[in-house]
Length: 65
Image (cartoon, rainbow, N blue to C red):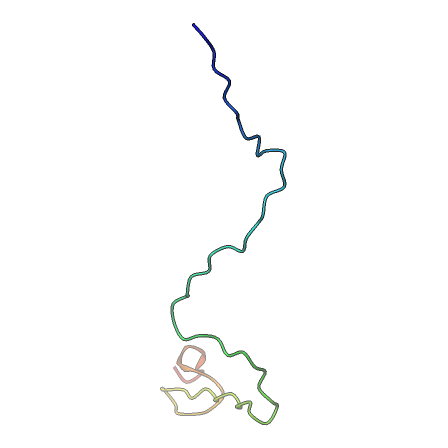
């Protein structure tokens, strides 16, 4: 039996090119890419109780239950 010489590329010692990972599109509306100015910010909506119709708390924390 004869052994034929086979050239083996030794790629383990060579530096490899690392590429960016593949990025898939996420579900939902895309994020905004800008900061909103202070004049664009909306004020928070106040809680309104369904039991007593007063502002400042919700039905779970109502004292008139």
